[in-house]
Amino acid sequence: MLKGILAVSGQSGLFKMISQAKNSIIVESLVDGKRMPAYATSRISALEDISIFTEEADVKLVDVFKSIFEKENGGPSISHKVSANELKSYFAEVLPDYDRDRVYVSDIKKVIMWYNLLVDKNIFKFGEEEEANTEQSVEAASKEAKA
Image: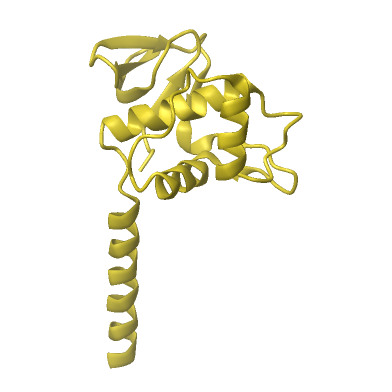
């Protein structure tokens, strides 16, 4: 679901990887569709590799997005421009045991901004993925039973 979606330091928004060049990758902005090269000197993070600190263990960003998705019934969340206290209380509802010492308000803003952008671009397919996985499991089980 988040495969190929990137965050590039120094650039706002999220990007989709299009192709590789000799010394860079070509990315396309999810915000305005403009393409640009992202060089090795830029810090590039794949969303699927990002985790959020909690008191117990780190939680994958996709799981946080899924929690927000379920809370908001597939719709957009609150704005990332609300007050710091509102952001913290909202994030505590979504991920109750997040590490309040290591997860900053700026991190919460990014997560919410990214989530809203991905919902706006209709990138989330949580229900469809789960149904497809269930159907594949049922098919595999029926093949095993026939064998």
